[in-house]
Each structure stands twice: as C-alpha cells, then as structure tokens.
Length: 64
Image (cartoon, rainbow, N blue to C red):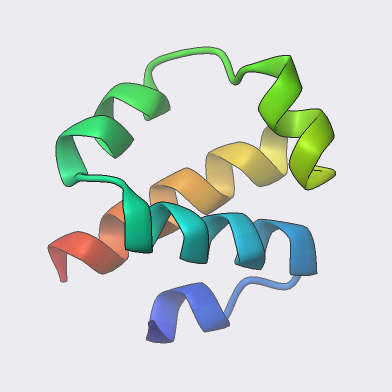
C-alpha cells in the first residue's frame, strides 16, 4: 500500500485502504466516473476532492 500511505489526509488514507481491501478495480473505475454519495462523504469525513483522490489512489494500488 505504498501509494495509499503517501496520502496526506487521514480520512482519505482510511477510505483508500477501505476501498483497496473491499472493492474491485471495476467498482473503483466506475466510482471515478460518478458523483460521490453524500452519505459516504459524511460517514468518512471526506471532501469531494479527498474522495476522488482516495478512489483513484486505491485503483492505482490495485492495478500496480
């Protein structure tokens, strides 16, 4: 999880780890093209930018 560990925001890092461990690359690719669920943002304490960064980083980690 080298890429995920480089994320600065703790919330983004936690969500990226969650995505890496529980989602497929296809699910993460789809998530990059959709607006984030407001409930997910609220639950994880993320901004839309942090969400996008976490999802794209988790996807990159899965594909590495």
